Image (tube, rainbow, N blue to C red):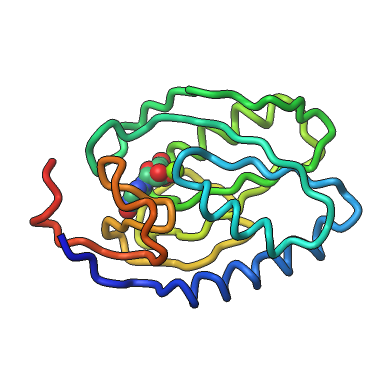
Length: 176
Ligand code: IMP
Ligand code: MG
């Protein structure tokens, strides 16, 4: 399976630098809590955070929504909750990709009732032309066509997360 490069490592880093700059300006002096959604967001989180130049804490949540296939099930299970109390905290969720948005929609609802001072969303990739529940994505890296992508934290059956670029694989190579 030979992935075609969709977004190069250089372009990703330049974009994360831009996003980091905006986040630094918006959250300066607010003691930001970054919440990464495992597993996919771990690489975006690590690289984005190093472009943020104000005080930042980290926490992670793990959810499952996909099982082993390439279509979202709509069923979200929290496998690991936050370690941190988020009441009165400024929270920024970091995601690798927003597809159907079902995962995020559920998570935002779940976190909002914990009364954070603010709750916003940053995503490296957003698929275009996909119908999803209304949600404001405060920081978007790239809008991409709704095809299945891998790399930079994104997997197909737990593989390819380590690719330093975002790539596309042939539909024919993806077994359901
Ligand atoms: P959503 O709930 O459909 O927005 O997507 C939830 C999760 O599915 C994302 O956080 C990713 O982990 C995964 N996902 C969605 N699209 C892709 C893709 O194109 N490649 C790999 N994983 C994806
Ligand atoms: Mg994910």
